[in-house]
Image (cartoon, rainbow over all chains, first blue to last red; front, side, top):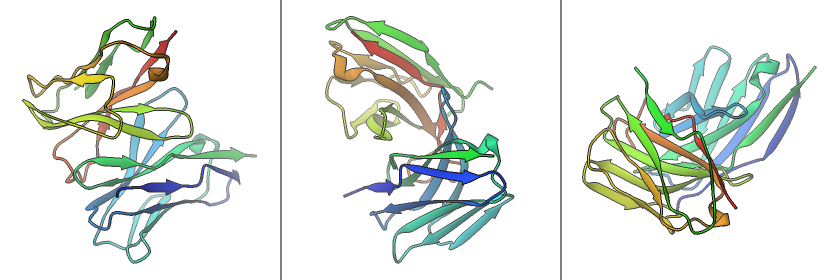
Length: 108
Length: 115
């Protein structure tokens, strides 16, 4: 079946790198996404990776995909207080399946 | 360009009442879906539609109805509200299911409380 799992909390110091991990079950996923949700707001697409790619870099964001292990990660370089939010990974087959979300807390 | 518009933003219902959550998009997206978000559970798919006249059930469809008479609109109906339906509801749309390199566009959500 379809399932996406993430750890629930991550705390980092401002300026450090954050790594948020995700595992998924359906190997037929064509796209994998990272969404960001700030308090009281909807979900904002951060980045995505196509399933035939291993890595994608977009400014401070790096997405790594290990298809063999069905493991996806999001690295945020030079984490800032504005990065504090909930981060969701999602896999897309015929519909979008979300993980429970990782709450990132950035402290000075 | 409004994107995905959800109304209302907040709603309080009494148990047993019915209501309709509205969702409209102006991007000519074929695919639309409804999710509910509960603490610690992420977003769970309620119903989705791959085009006008076509709807299907997601993970948690019980207690909800949908219809898709136009490409633009995808209303979610609560038939007889229950406290377990207290949640934040998100509508999303995409160009094509499972093919969205641009991802899905989400509305800003409807916070529903059933007392």
